[in-house]
Amino acid sequence: MIIVLLILATFVFAGAMIFARAGRTRVLTTLISGLIIAGGLGAIILNDNYHWGMHQVTQTQIQDLAPLQSKRAALRVQQLGTGSERVIAYRVASATKASRTVAATTTTTKLTTGTPAQVQIRTTTWQFKNHWARVLFSLGNTKTKVVARQYLFTIPKTWQVLTVRS
Image (cartoon, rainbow, N blue to C red):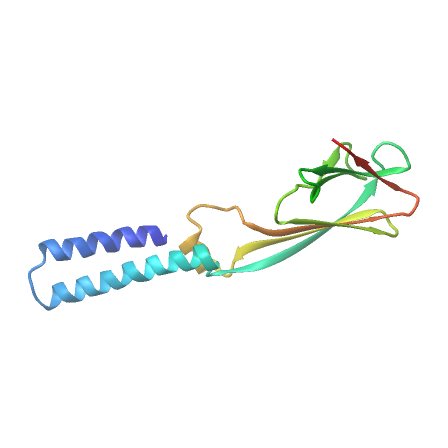
């Protein structure tokens, strides 16, 4: 919506500068449309750089874990690159396929021992504060930007974590 407003204000500004006669109406029209253009550009910059009109929302999802292959193998950890990054393979009790954590700069993983066997996935995303901010800045984009994702694995002492070397 703000892009449409900027385009319209630009046309009004150019039309007033080119076609309007010199006088109070021309000055007022160019001043108002110029302020709309400057304000719209400023709002786009603030939204892009500082998430103006948005706030962070954290959602937590808890899933029960099942062993990957046997009763003793709970998680499979594979180191990537220099070893500071890793991929953890696990299986949710209600799923038939193994899931993997994504090794990204916004992802952190923690392993703890305890019962029951579960994974807690905490995802923080940017969401619009209100309907007005959504109308101005969404531009048809319904995806939310992920700020951080944290996996907290709780596994019993009887389960093992297998480290796979590549």
